[in-house]
Length: 85
Image (cartoon, rainbow, N blue to C red; front, side, top):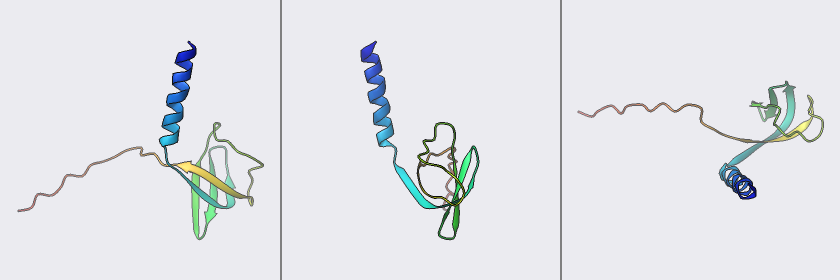
């Protein structure tokens, strides 16, 4: 059983390490249970969050934050190439 747990943790860490992370820094414009909106330059970035999102400190409107996130494709639609005559 210990070996199974070790292998599971090892594989989980490999998958997590392979996932590229990004970050955005700026003031918080809005906070809900499911998202946080951050101002980056002239753009507003809405990032989804849930109960598993680790928050250090008090997350509130006006706070300056750095949010680390990953990108994951939800759907991929392949377009047929137009045939050349």
